[in-house]
Every structure is written in C-alpha cells, then in structure tokens.
Length: 564
Image (cartoon, rainbow, N blue to C red):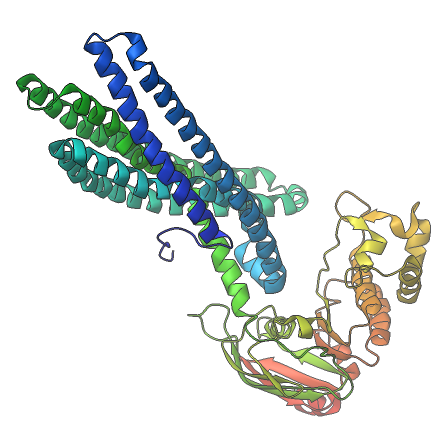
C-alpha cells in the first residue's frame, strides 16, 4: 500500500472552496466567541441579582450570534456538498474512461467485482470524504486558534492549559489513527476479494450447478465473508477505542480548566464573568478536534477508495502523455516501426516480450503463432493500447510514440477477441458499437453480408430484438459474427484478432473463417491463433517464443522451418 497523501485534497475548484470555507469559518469562530461573551454576561448579571430586562440585549445578541453561526455552518455544508457532488461525477467519469482505455487485461488483473464496486460504492465514499473532511480540517485550524487567542486576553493560565493539552490529544489521535488506517487497509483488501469472488460466482453459477460444486463453493463464499466480517469488527474496535480516548482526554483537559477556574474564583483572583466565558469556550475549543477524530473513521473508507481511484486514473494518464497528429489514418502508404520493445505485466516481473523489433507498411495479414503463454495476446494488447511497454521505440508514419494508447491510433482499430462481449441491448445497437449513428439499413446490409440474416428473420423484433443479459441468448458462433459485424460496419483499417475461432466447432469455424477472409480485404490484420489452417492465409508470420519474435515473410518460409 503506497503512502497516503496528507493535507487537503486537490481537485478542480478546490482553491475557491477553501477560500469560501476559510472566510465563513473565520466568521463562525467570531460568532462562537460572541455567543460565549453574551451568554456569560447574561448569566453573570442574573447571578448578581440584576433584573431580566437588563440582560435582554445580551440575550438577543446571543441569539443573533447563534443564528448567524448556524447559517454559516449550513452554507459551509452546502458548498462542500456541491463540491463533492461535482467532483464525484467527474471522478466516476474519469474512472470508467480509464477502465476502457486500460483495456480488458487491466480488468481481468484487478477483477470485475472490485472495479465495479470502486466505480459505484467507492466514488460515493469519496464524495462523503470530501463533503465531511474538508470543512472539518479547516475548522480544526481556525476555530481553536481564534478561541485560544481570545482566552489569552481573559486568563493566561487557562489559555496555557488549553494550548498544552492539544499536542497530547493529537499524538494519541495519530497513534490510534495509524492503527485504524492499517485495519482499514486490510478491511478494504478483504472487501475487494469478497466483491471479486461474488461476481465470479454469479458468472459461473450455472457451471457450478452442472458440476455439482455449488455447495462446496458456497462454503468458500462463507469463508471469504467471515474474513471480511472479522476485518470489519477489528476496524470498529479500533475506531471505538480511539473515540473513547479522544473524548476522555478532551474531557480531562476541560476539567483541568474548570478546576483551576473554580479555585481561583474561591480565592478571588479571577472574576465570575471572564471565568464563565472561558468555561463556555473550552468545549468549543476542543469540539473541532473531536469532530475530526470521529469523522476520520467515518471517512477512512473514502480515503482508501480515493487512493485507488487516483492510482487508476494516474496510470491511464501516463499512457496519454503524447498525442498523434490530427487526422492520422492508416492507409496503403502508412508505416509502423517497433524497435527494442519490452513488456512486463508488473514493474518487478520478468518481461513477457523482450527486445521486439518489427516494421510494416500498408495493408496485409500478419499472423502471430506460438505456444500458450508465449506472448501473442500480450502483443495484441500492446497494439491495442491496453498495455504500456516498459521500454522501446514506436514510430507511426514517422512520428515517435511512447505507446499505442492514443485516441488517433485507436480510432483505426477494430478488435475481435476470443469471447466478444454482448451488451444487453438490441442486435442493431450491439453491431453499432464503433458507429453509433449507423442507419438500420446499413446494419441490415452488414447482417446479410456476414450471414446472420437467418437468425434475425426468426426474431419477432428483427434487428431490434434484445440480446445478451435479460434478452435472447446467442451461440458462440453467433456472438463471433456480431463481433465481425461490428468490425465490418466500422470500416476501420486495422483489425486485431485474438484467437477468434478458438472456442467454435469445426463447421462454425469454417463458416466464420470465410466471413473473416472477406473482412481482411484492404486491411492491416494482426491475427493471433493456434489453428494452423490459418497459416496459408497469412502474408507475414511472427512466431512468438521465449519473449522474442521471429519473422517469416511468407507461410512457405515458415513451413520450411517448422514443417520440413
């Protein structure tokens, strides 16, 4: 877990909010002092036997100060709520965009459950943190400072007691806060495991039932749930202990002030009015500190979630540090050159691809062959911009890039994975993935071209029939044809295919292959596959083995090496 950021969070509009809060809290502090002064005056004069009418002005001024204080507090809350709502929406949008930009490999590595939970509940916790923590932190600096300065003008001894006890309280808050932070980090990790486990279980529920493993898997879910429950209880135990310690030490400090004032009132070294004013201000002095201590635990999940969100967004931003020229489009004269490229899934892990060199110009079908785990899918992910190279030079049309994660490059790409995702929408909307404004006529023409029209003609709503979750279920071959239709409709010049027919039966694979071959016309195609019948369709072959790439300029040259 990386070191947690200290201080006030920085977001668009932060300075304006901090300025508004600082001014309103400063006036609130003045109102707090005014409340104490007018209340102490009214009580003192009544204690001395004065008529109620003589303190009516003081009581009225106390009520005015009280109302102004409440109005200022409400305005602070509104400003913080608007700030947190605005930045919460922006963070969620950036986070989801980062999911798309970082690609399926990132989603698989981190787990769908965690990422969905972070985008939904995590952002809500961040909003709560921003809404509560920012006003509390500013109040902790300003209100005690103004209060103790005024107490110095009334009674130096009480002011010294208040000043000296604050560091002691803060030290205990830090010690207990560090313990709570460690517990919260562990709790968040168990929550991440639980959310991933739950989503994976839902996805595989049918398979588990068929294999008769649902009860055994239910026991595993119980174990994961128990671990999360224990982590939550440990965190709450530390939170309750820190709240008790904070209340104890602040109450003890107020008691020291009250006892000291009482003894000096008895011996006559201090008058009732300043003593009562100090006594009323003492709880107000510690109140912001106690609120920060209490809210720290309430917003701890928000701090952890904010770190995760900023890490993901920051990782995505690092892949977009440079940009391609406007209007970049792959044509028959375009060129791609890769030199000394290395890729590792983790900074400390060994490279999956090492010192890769490759160059190409124009269109063509390039095959990627190799054993499972050799790095074929990794190379496809690099070309798609889903993985950031650790080193290497990339040149597109003579322009140097740090990676392929650039919108101008990615707008040239259509991607067909092993298992295409079917969105819970109509067939037409699924096919329009790359071209949302395509007409129904264009979609119908594509459906006929790829051979999906027999299926569509049987559906009550035709191309507007809902498919995917909550709709009609498609076979693996039909899902592949929907993915092909997306690529064909998009007319994008670069197509990336990662084992597109790996899970199909022989007959369906043959039918889909004929569609794909038509799709390859005047395109730059990168095809990763284990199926050797594709080899004769490849104009250039890259064999991925032991992290490197060996090139063959034709399938005949490859056959001489691998099939003598």
